Amino acid sequence: MPTTPLDFSTVLAASMHDMKNSLCLLLQSMDNISSRLEHDEKTKTEFAQFHYEIARLNSNLLQLLALYRNCQNSLPLNIEEVYLDELFEELLIKNEMYISNKMLKCTVEIEDDLSWFFDNDLITNLLNDILVNAMRYSKSQLLLKAFKEEQYLKIQIMDDGAGYPEQMLLNTNEQMASVSLSQSRTGLGLYFASLIAKAHNNNGQYGSVNLSNGGRFNGSVFTLTLP
Image (cartoon, rainbow, N blue to C red; front, side):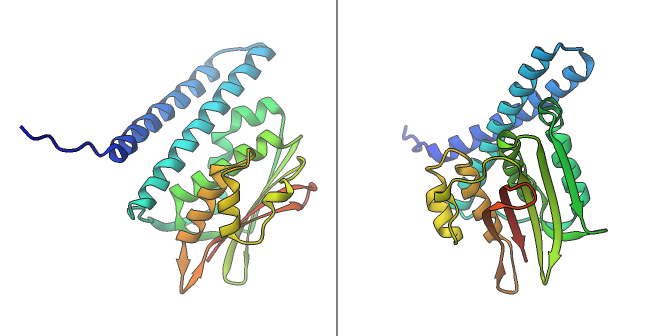
């Protein structure tokens, strides 16, 4: 009886999807357990680090799954109206444990009633990965900022860390995508961010990402621009 050749890429994608779901359940369980237990400071730190590493792994799986779908030309965008204050609130709640344990001051600046049309899941995952890295490298402060500039939405995440390495501060998305995979600071996350940003277009205008140093805290500044 002839056998159908195994499509390993499809099996891998399905496995990543299952692992992603399992990690989401694990993160939810950790949040529930943490809220019911009283920890000493050492246990709190270890628990927060555990939560942080699982969140990073989950983010990487989400990115790999999106990249696979993009390679298969099956990465549809679900465009909907999103209020930026709700998006930022969700990001901070997701990372509340690590923020609290590291005693980070997170400031949010948003224009009143600011909303935009984009794929909420993809952009939330994109920004969460950038925020997770900003938390890791920041000393004490973070800023999440959203505003309109001409016909574009600008979303910025700033920290007070040492900033991006010089070799990552390139001018174009294509250059950044090719170099970021070899860097340890954000790696796959920046390639994913560039891909998702450019997938958003409106009347021939495409989204983009930009890295810089300086900003409010003289650290790293990540800027997402959406048409």
